[in-house]
Length: 613
Ligand code: ADP
Image 1 (cartoon, rainbow, N blue to C red):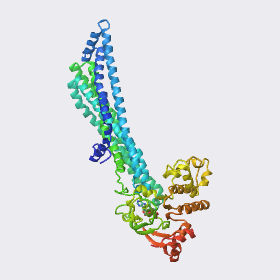
Image 2: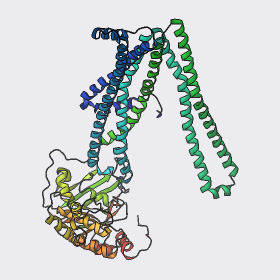
Image 3: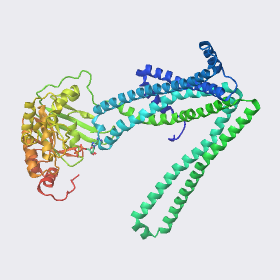
Image 4: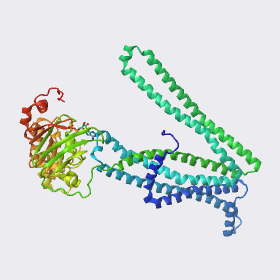
């Protein structure tokens, strides 16, 4: 279905209904909005009656019912006689103003209430989506999707808001306007009304046809223009190829063909556009002539004629607005579909029924024949991983980029679960523990240190808002950050993102280490940064890490020589498998992959040689 189709698909209807279902909580307000919408539309009827009455009094014409009622009223309350006629006119014109005011009040409150409902729906959606994003599986947060997530929460909710407001507003107000105008037409002159109501749609048809023609050609014209641009760009950047193959004439012909097509479209658009207003004018003039002829034959008086034309005029806006409704529904249901897709994302990692608290101390951590694929049926990123880490051991993971190191350690805080096999702590599957208690035991220091726009204190205390000053300082000392923090303008109360305060990469890392240490986790995951730190920073971070590792079981994606040398086990990953394991000296003696990696990373800065398969 094209974006411009006029009919709603079943899917669009379904999504939009789901969206509308969210207005249920505001049902009272919606009903009120309909009442005010009826007031807005219905008052037109009063306006016409009073206008016709007023004109009849001023210009002369058959007395209308409204005028007679006004006459009786004035007669009942005022017997002065002399000013009787003037008072009746004032009363009739007063009624006209009253109905106009009534229409305004109806408009104001129906609009206000509907906007209120729409904003409430969007408020709920926005908060729900944010909450959902917080709980989305880690798999969601890969680079390409982050921007999309941002746009969904912000832009799509905006589209939805417009979809709800415009659609409900139009549906609540315009049918009443249409109805009141139609009734006014019929009451003024039934025969003429039927005649016009048949002709009115027929007049719209040619306007529609020309309108569609403009739209269609404009779209095709845009495509042609894009083709022209890409052809021109190709010729410019591929100038050498064109010349070498001598294809100038062919390119010229292609360009001229596209160019001419664009020209033809533009001319068609101009013709259709220029035809529309004369067409409308001629049609309306013809209609007016027909009505005038009819008025002469049936002795229709001027006030009635004016009201009749006014009512016809008032019917135009509702017809136009109601015909837009489908488009708005289509736009907002497309946005709503994307939003609902987030809300409907199933939890892949969650507390299993009967999950228990993980309580320290932590003994052995074991990966038993763990296989993992990011998508069902996708390539296995980890394959048959077996490993055991005893309390206090340092496990270093090395391997080329993409070999699966990050994936392996991310299984530990259960960012995702193994596709096959199990990860165990003291013989119990991780899935047997509550997520909260498991993650409390795992500290994580990633390569990209993310700092919040907040004070140093609160950045370190991020995982534990109740942390005392003493606890935060202790963590900072362990992370070798205390001294440089004290040297900052306001010490621990310095706001990090403040302009002009730039932390070095090494300082940022040490803050991240302090943050991870604050909760004193028995398990620590380190993704060591290799990014160019100067030697001094490097040394400070290394010292901080060495201290941080004390008394914990550590999984380190290791780039630092000191970490690797000291490691109790070095696991060399290759294509998702553990290719080699052992201590530094053992592996070096054995040669093969580790030896190559080691020399590659630490001894010379020579261009990378391919790893053996
Ligand atoms: P390393 O940490 O050793 O560089 P990773 O564990 O990051 O390796 O990646 C291992 C493999 O898994 C790579 O081929 C990578 O492209 C793929 N991968 C990583 N994250 C995702 C993800 N979120 N979705 C799909 N594939 C991923």
